[in-house]
Length: 426
Ligand SMILES: Cc1cc2nc3c(=O)[nH]c(=O)nc-3n(C[C@H](O)[C@H](O)[C@H](O)COP(=O)(O)OP(=O)(O)OC[C@H]3O[C@@H](n4cnc5c(N)ncnc54)[C@H](O)[C@@H]3O)c2cc1C
Image (tube, helix red, strand yellow):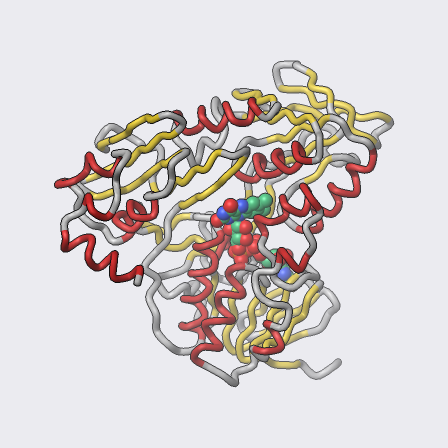
C-alpha cells in the first residue's frame, strides 16, 4: 500500500468557509502545510454567481472570488475534483474516492449543503435540475438548447428566485410553485414578500403559492412536459428546477462520534465535539447572536467568517466567534431587499415598527429595547446602520421610531452611539 501523505491543516470544501479558514491560517502560520480538497473541479468561485452564468454565460474568471494565483501565492496545496469518502478520527486521516489516504493534524469540515430533492414521480428524468453548483448551471445552459419555452421552479426561496431571474433573462416563461402562502417566506415578512411577488409578476413570472408539485410528467420518460400539483392542476413546461431547500452536508461526520444536530454542532471556537476537528459554513450549526443559541444560517458571510474563526483556532490562535445570524441582501427583478435576524417573530412579545413609503418599506423588530430583526425593501441605504445596532446589541428605546423614518441616518443617533460608528468609516 502507498505510504500515507500528511498535511498539517486539511480543509474539505473549497468555498466561502474553506477559503476563509485558509486565509486566517496563513495570516498566523506562514509555513504549515495547508491542503484543500473539493469534489468540485474549479478554483473557489462565488456560488451566488451561478445565476449570472445561467443568465449570460458569465466566464469563470469573473466568478472567482480570489485571483487565480491565490493558492500558489499562499502555498496552499489543492486536490480538486476529488471527493473525500471517509474521515477516520482515530487515525487522523481521510480517504479519497481514488482510495488515496492523507493524514492531518487539524481538520476543517467546510462541506456546505446539499439541495433537498423530494421523491416525487418523475423526479429522475431528463430536464429536472437542482441549482447549487456551477455544474448545475452548465447542465441547465446546455439543456436550454432543447428550445425550452417554459420552466417550472419548485420553491420560492432565494435560490428558486435567483434561478427564475436567470431563466427570465434567457427568455423563458417561468412559473414558481411555492408550498407556503408566500414567496421568500423565511427571509421576508408578509409586506416585503408581497412587494417581491409584485415585481416577479411585473417581469412576467407566474407565482403559484400554497401548492406543492406532486408529479412531473414526461414524453417517453426522457423530456419533461409538465408538472402536476397535489390538487391536480397541470402546468406545462419543458424544464423543472427543484429549489425547495438545502440541508447541511454532514455525511463525513456521521458515525465518527462528532456531534450532529441539524448540522455539525460547533462551539464558539468553531470546534466540533471531537478534538482537532472544526466545522463552519452551511454544514455547521453555529452560534446565532439574535437567538442566543446554535442555528443553521446558510449564508455566504457567515460561512466565510466562521471559516476565518476556525482557521485561527486551528493554527493555535484562540479566537472566539461572536456569532452570526440570518442576513440577506438581494436584488431580484430590480427590487433591493435587506433582511436580517428574526423576521417573523414567533409571538406577540415583540415590538414591531414599520413604515411604508412610495416603492419602499422598512420594518424593525425589537425585544427588550434591542433590535432582533429587520426588513428593508426598496430604499435599503441605511439598513447597514440598523444591522450594526442589532449586532452590537445597542439599546434603541430612545430613538426607535427614527429607525424606520425616511431620513434615518447616523445623525438620528446620540453622539456616544454615532461617533464610534463614524470613526469606523474613516
Ligand atoms: C444560487 C444560489 C444563490 C445564493 N445566493 C446567496 C446570497 O445572495 N447571499 C448569501 O449570503 N448566500 C447565498 N447563497 C448561499 C451561499 O452560497 C452559501 O451559504 C455558501 O456558499 C456556503 O459556503 P460553504 O463554504 O459553507 O459551502 P459551499 O459553498 O456549499 O461549498 C462546499 C464545498 O464542499 C465540497 N464538498 C462537500 N463534501 C465534500 C466531500 N466529501 N469531499 C470533497 N468535497 C466536498 C462541495 O463540493 C462544495 O464545493 C446562495 C447559494 C446558491 C446556490
